[in-house]
Image 1 (cartoon, rainbow, N blue to C red):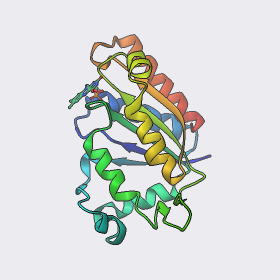
Image 2: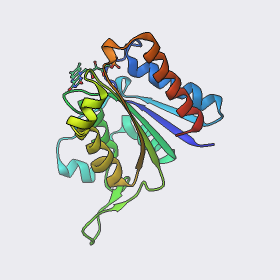
Image 3: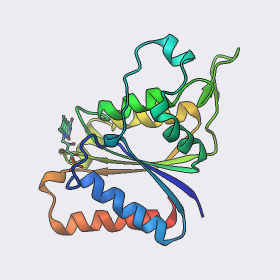
Image 4: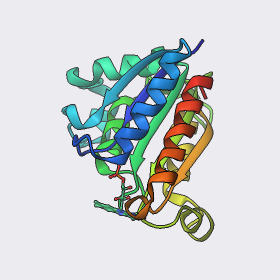
Length: 193
Ligand SMILES: Cc1cc2nc3c(=O)[nH]c(=O)nc-3n(C[C@H](O)[C@H](O)[C@H](O)COP(=O)(O)O)c2cc1C
């Protein structure tokens, strides 16, 4: 059984968003299989913008984000769900990661060229929805807006992305496909992947 943390990165709290249905499906599968599931909903958090390197290095995580930052540390597996906005994650999710992946907590500066990763041992699943076809994002755009999250943010602190769900053409999606994706996420939750 795994300790799973789901980070809902959709800035819109409206329940009709597909990202929220995907989150619910994953959480349902994971809980039914006996995994421990925590959920963070960024739309309901106060996420201030980070303004300077001095703040990044010295101020610590803002009080309102201390709980979520600790939840990341407790988790063995992270599921990060977001819609593609202007080719990458919404600014709210990026702002959140800038606040919680702080030196001393997520990585440590050292004499060596590369900082020490402090969140090793954790894995991640990325679930991204979009208006364009998924194959176009993966093949033509080379999934650059997601690779940045996988390599430069998660990889940088030691979290190993293992799975990526690219869910395209959400607005045009028929009921059958919609349900198929939900079933896939429920099954992924059951397996704790
Ligand atoms: C501000 C904004 C920017 C968007 N940028 C893109 C984009 O760059 N590429 C794309 O395929 N879809 C883009 N979309 C469409 C969303 O990705 C799509 O509506 C969303 O994934 C649907 O999932 P949801 O129901 O959970 O919101 C954008 C939507 C908004 C509101």
